[in-house]
Length: 335
Image 1: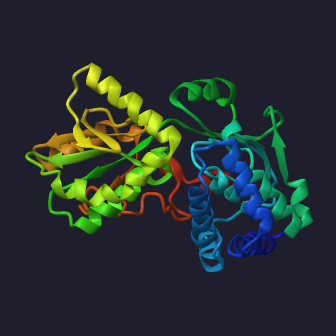
Image 2 (image 1 turned 120 degrees about the vertical axis):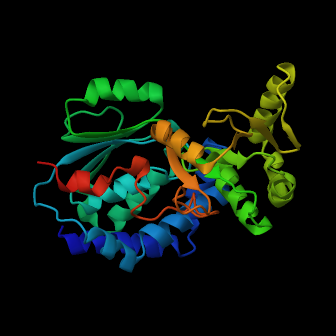
Image 3 (image 1 turned 90 degrees about the vertical axis):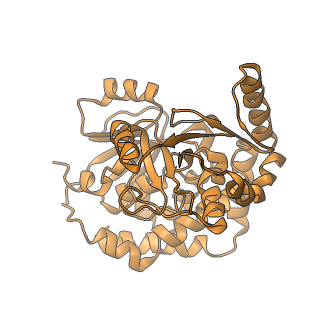
């Protein structure tokens, strides 16, 4: 397949995702049945984002044309995460648009939707059947893209360190507030915190706030996310984490559906959001520099520090590479 044909096939996949489909609805229902964190609404959000941000013809061509690909076809092993719906799609897109073969090991939590879309891709152009393989064990490959926890990353580095690789560890996102944010901006921040129940690396898990910050507007703005309490697993996490905080006499902001806790750590448990006071933005910059390997996105309106606008953390574009590692450049430059 030549480059233009690969682009054309993914554009057709985008058109499929924008069109009502009984088969797609059934796949979404099965994915939800196998993993209750993958609600139908969250699956639909992910698919809509992929169709609009990744599979728009103009955006796709503009992005891919920045790179020069050789005719040398490599076999790329992808070890996929499964924390949010379709989280590995961007890696799949990169590998196949670059003209390589894909061997993908799926997370047990996310083993429904991606195979469905890969089969749809093959339906659109059967030549992709020779370029796509879903595997249980990764063998006979030229390069690896692996995403996991800090613990699994050590194993990845041991097994794959001698091969060209991208190995991703745990990351979370932060927001820096000034106290001057509008209700609408804080509502959008709620999207960054609560979309996908906060399970993604692009979800905000910690707030940096000025001394004497008044949480009144924040509490008012995020009240519309109260429906999170309707989700059984989220409610269980909330109750468990709140009990731990109470038992340990750790103060928290009293909001029904989320525990807002002063804590220096960037990662926070499901249903918790951490915050830390700052004296100056210079001190925040220093903290970010020290912890940059833990941070995926920095949300806010302070141009000198933030790289994502309020409400946009879970709406990445084609060039928003995980861990700021250009996946397409990596694939284009494989010897």
